[in-house]
Image 1 (cartoon, helix red, strand yellow):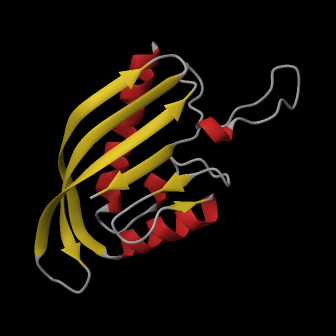
Image 2: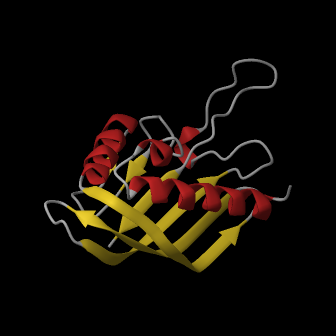
Length: 149
């Protein structure tokens, strides 16, 4: 599997997770984030946050505002992949009941995600590099994600 194939798989995983998010379930999206203090997120519901605990609370809050929704389509605007760095900028076309509304509301968000050290087995955010724990060392998959409306 090439770095491009790996990133395409990550993009697909995120898009599937976002469909669940639009139904009010933050967990599949949360699984794709680095669970370290270096994780970060910027979304339309407040200031950018840093650190897994804040990212988790922010995603839980944003998901709690959505019901009966779905991700309808995605437009990749830009994608760049090397073995060390990858990013994707896409427009996410979404629809859901939002807040107190009982109407399905369609909307679009611009999302930018980037990954560090794209390889066959790992995708590590720049600040999520772990110290070696043994001869082989360990790396935890991670995702740094910024979203803006």
